[in-house]
Image (cartoon, rainbow, N blue to C red; front, side, top):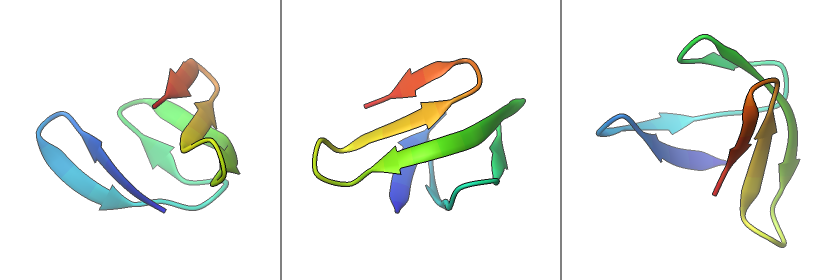
Length: 41
């Protein structure tokens, strides 16, 4: 999944780290990335 975060674009998958948090789940239908620190919408 592609995510815009902090003014940059990242390709992420479950298990990746981003900005000090880890990707736990990706909900493609609702366009939400669940991380250890909360949601990225």
